[in-house]
Image 1 (cartoon, rainbow, N blue to C red):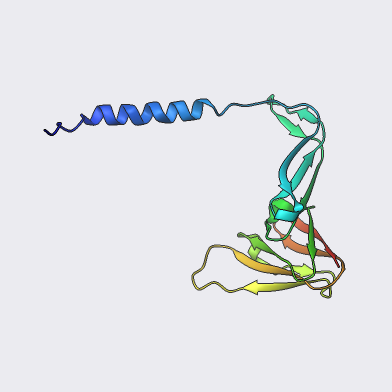
Image 2: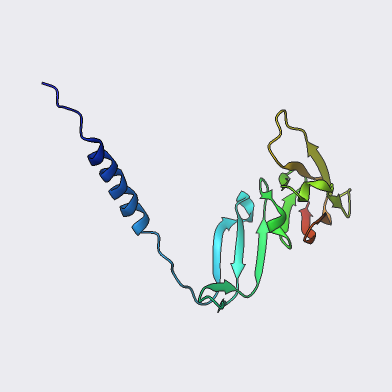
Length: 159
């Protein structure tokens, strides 16, 4: 015995109910005091630590200061301005520059510490990509000039 197909309205209503139920758990929480996210710099996910939250004009909150430590495998973008990338010799990370940041190639202050390796893609992904290869112990700064100023990412290579 086969059942007739469910009316189209029932399927749409069930899908809508599922979406509303799923989104109902997405709330806007408030925090006070320091907030730490991420699993740590060793896994590439990074750690972001924010100071006490301040209230914005529209009632939202925003951290007063921000420090970001990133590790091997991290994918950096212009949004990571001011971040510190911590690597060991031989480890790598990636720098992706979307338009218009891709117009000027990045520069590194000490090429003996970190090498910028341009990545050529078979098909244009819509951004410029550079590998950051840690060569030797020391510190260097990767700079990218763009429309909104200069992005600087500090790279610390440990022995």
